Image 1 (cartoon, rainbow, N blue to C red):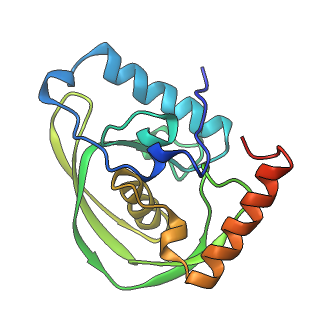
Image 2: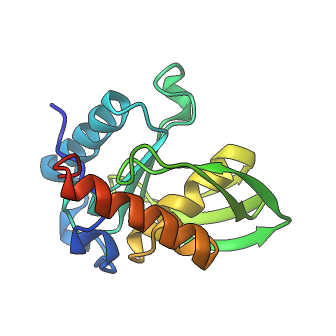
Length: 173
């Protein structure tokens, strides 16, 4: 079942998240949350979703750059840490919590991340291109940072002004 994705303006989106506790690993609740997050992300046609975007202030993200086409590309990152970043890529980025807005964002070309899986096991993932971008974007969410914060002040203020206009018209809930 799809969960409600919070939109820009909700304070949860700019709140740093708490780590998932050791006692939560290997529980049905954590596995169900990840499954519901994947369903929500696919329903919204995204490639990544962080727990704070659905109102849960925990360090958990789901990513699938294949958009559900390749089961092997599904990633669940619990308590992720980016341990290395190299190079630079600039590409169009959007966010399920800021629908309708896309801008060019500078990110590392390559990242290495360390995270835990749903059973608590530590693993590393090396990523480049879109997957590196998605890992950085979702990890930012866990720190309470939105892609808007990565834009120039002028672009950021322009988007905020447009969102205020949508809110006045009742088109931004």
